[in-house]
Length: 241
Length: 74
Image (cartoon, rainbow over all chains, first blue to last red; front, side, top):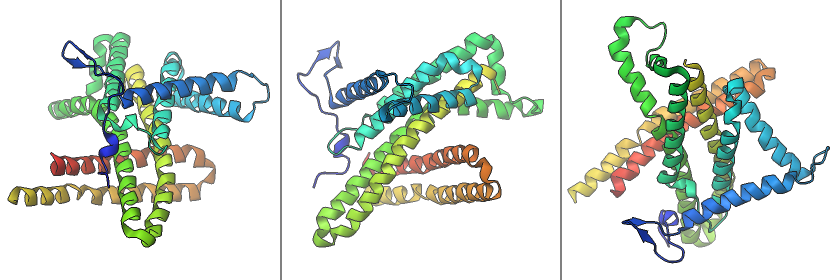
């Protein structure tokens, strides 16, 4: 029986490439990221190619996902969020398809690698800080002092606020990564029970079916949470408080 | 051998955080049900916020799990 964490192993596909001391070989993680991008691209272009006034089933799926994110941006960021819509939409689709591709047996979940989620989170964090600095200039630093708080609380509040601001990329990335990793490990552990118990393995198998449904829910939910938190951070950057 | 035992005890202690998470998730959903029961029209709005709160609370459980894994396997 393979170890439950073996599924997260990164394997190189094709030749090992090293440039300037860095390993840039093509891996299964990179392959699934490209696959996710291709799936999103093909899904959105092909479903909308008919441009029916009354949408077909697949076209309404594309329209639903578009409207879902458009509403999310409108409600959480406001009218100023419109320029960032395309970024948030691609972010949502990429994470969603990445999570769902991971649910296919024998495939690979690239969102279960902390480096992937952390790279996305730190990009968002830096970009949002730059947006806030460009928009508000030095006034941005008043963000670290909640308005209306008494001045003598400043030595206590400002470090807390700065710390909570700096921990945003960590919590954002760890949430997605830990959810994916824990879910897939748990499914593998239950899979091990099914094999080990023989005929009585039917009981953990039933749990596993329910668990698969739950994991698909988590996959969609975590994509949603990652995106909505990006929207909330963007709102903070644009409006300050 | 003592190090192994200490690691296992530490991993067990790390997941005590789940106590708070259990209370938190229960609280979120009980409040969500109560508010939908009082005002079913608000369901659409309240449900999204409830799910967001659930995901944020669940993340705490996963942080604890992560620490437990770090203690056990590193």
